[in-house]
Length: 182
Image (tube, rainbow, N blue to C red; front, top):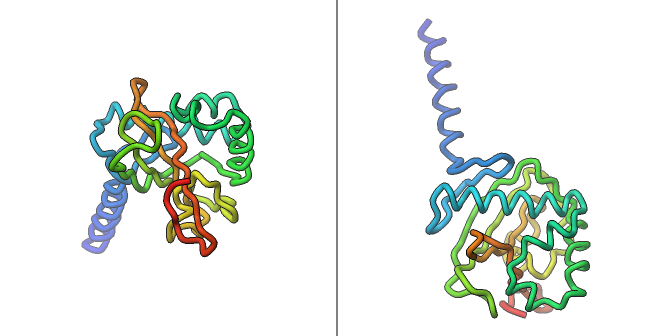
């Protein structure tokens, strides 16, 4: 009887610890971290943005994907480049059934003409994606995690609507070291 109680207690303890790792859960997006300066309502809007953005890529919905960008990003990036960026994102072969937000880091200042607070976000898709040639706005391209086939990095900016995707271009030099902007 004691061993059954011990096993029950151990199972309950492990499952409650595992649940504690998730800070917020909204449909297919789990936040494994807090979002600086955001309560549950803002995090829910961010989860919807993340889900819609990656769903649009997965389901070949260019117009929905494009609508998730900030006005500043749309004004800054040449219009003919968006279809190429979308095609490159499709090459990642992402599946957004289960997206885990691993980190949300606030940047000291927004990129170029962006207005608001900018964040770098790292997500884990729970399955390998095709990251053999990361896109220039995937901030993992410049870091140590650039070969991890489960992770993708992107940027968001705060807006009147809540959050929007913004392209913060990261370049690399010939050695593959991060060189910062453009």
